[in-house]
Length: 544
Image 1 (cartoon, rainbow, N blue to C red):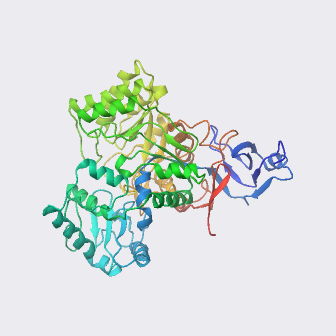
Image 2 (image 1 turned 30 degrees about the vertical axis):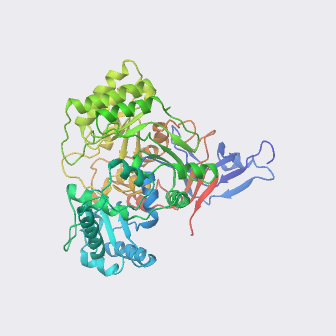
Image 3 (image 1 turned 90 degrees about the vertical axis):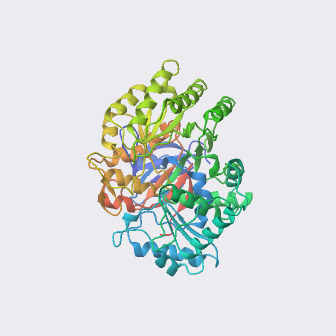
């Protein structure tokens, strides 16, 4: 490339820079993967050299690459190839068609899954779960298992039969595994079918509460075992799906049982990563003995050990596993549980560790803040940037306390949950109006839809699928996009390199098929990327 001239110029567009002023530009210049200039068409085109590549945006809207601050990424990568996905599909007929097509593509007898990302009320034409009869109709020769979050499971007769037979085998002493054996095998994508829990039969074939969780755990052991080489290709495939939704960076806050990161490392070594993939520290802490083991592990590790593509950031989303509340019920934990959490948190703070902690109830968030205030006396929270995640029922008081301390907030997609009481859950307008730094994520792939434009639509429209009010006080398009880009970069300690279209940052950008800022609010959920760039290179282009 001629010295002083950019490698690429993208011009004649509407670039939502998402800088501090949310300014709009027409063109950008890119060299060696970074943005070198942002401005008008004339200003940027004047920088051209004889070898500069020009891309005419034809008036299209461009946004920074979207960042998901809370995803169960490795879990999704290990299963996506074997799933049909009905995220955001508002027609029951269409959902069954999508599932049926996946069945057609499968070999006879091969299991077909839908492992989350949807809810029974999203179908405008016929709300409700799936019956055994209709699933038998579309999958007569394949076991078909459909998971709704962790609360229900729907399956056809073949799936019920295979799960029942597996359960009977276990009850006869068929080799139930220990926790450590099961964890090891699951982390390698094992198809060992020894976990317990029998399926429920009947017209609706639905499992609930703990029974549903047992059925789900058992069914997912039928996901095929994958070799090391296949796992690499599964991750590359999943990355391409995420790129197609405009995602360029994710934060995996999952568990060791979701699978190790060897495939991501392999892709990085091969120069094939198309998604910046960061993760939390993987350890197990279910009791005081394991807490001591976890502390030893934390002390022997280093926080924020990553590069521009991949690596470790912090701890979470469950610093101490028994501390795991729900928005559906009040969860009060005794002092022993909180003491174990505080013990880990204190050692983590001494080592400079960021914590990203699950807290749906305000009582949980408030107690976390109590501990943060104690630790802040010797270890600055403004430096540690703890994040309180979910925040479904957080109070104004807790938001103000978090802001004062220098904590951040992460909100996760609730596009399958209508309003049930006299307040918004989560209270996004309170959070936005407080001035605290907060980010928007998905909590996908099981709990919610993976598509970030569904999340943007949710907080801007205040609706859940198909078109039901959920948030009475939604936020602006500008605030929502900032939360899914620049603010998330701050949550991940990447604000110098990611999150906005500004000089010096990596050229992670997305060209959209329509204007995010001017389309009807309900069209936001239908926005699709035309092209996604990471480091100035195209990693996804649509077929249109």
